[in-house]
Image (cartoon, rainbow over all chains, first blue to last red; front, side, top):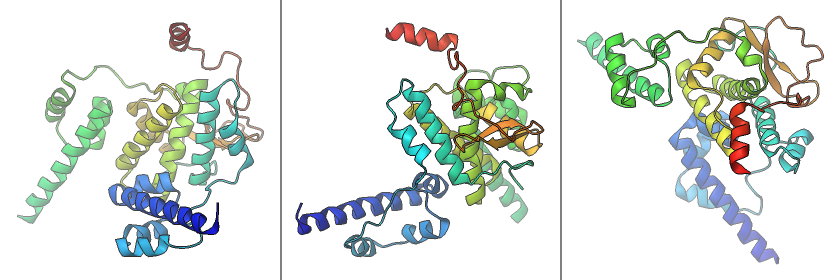
Length: 112
Length: 182
């Protein structure tokens, strides 16, 4: 891939990502935060971008999205070809969601 | 006048919420506790949405169900999603439950698992957490958070997925599915 083509691919990926993120945020902010793994502040910024702004941001030589999880256990589960595909899938989902929630084993209730 | 207008608004929100809950399979007790609509209206709504009368009888009240292997996996996934929504958004509790339940169902489906947790169970689970009867403990092996009884000793807790019992998930229904697939 030459440099020109690479930049075009990055722009394409940025554009697709930003448009999807914005659509999700505008449809249901709470769900979008879970799906995208963004902070509320960033979600608000992306939700309010104009098309011109999105185009401008997308035209960068850097990708605007990155991997959300750097936990080796999660990657092992996601890439495992073990006998129980379903089980490793749901195990990974629990680990990813637990990390998002930052869930310490609180002794008391969730709400309040 | 304003008070009345407000109550009309609140009522329409309640109706919308009730319809959403009925569509997701909530039992009448959930609707009664989460909306201010009368029992009669809820019954009528239920029949309109589901085309049949709601099931009668009491809700399951035991925390033990959440400790068995398959339900524990599903409950832990649901509660992790719920916690995230509860922490990061300003949603009212029932709306957070509804959204977390939808996301849980999606995840289960994407992984080819049956929906073990019903909305009523999920709602119950959050109640048990609020009442301090259930909580989560981190697995010492994978670091994920899993549903446990509040006063259980969890210093060296290992989850049911890191240490799978040999017959884990082999319910009669699962065996039947396997036989059909073979």
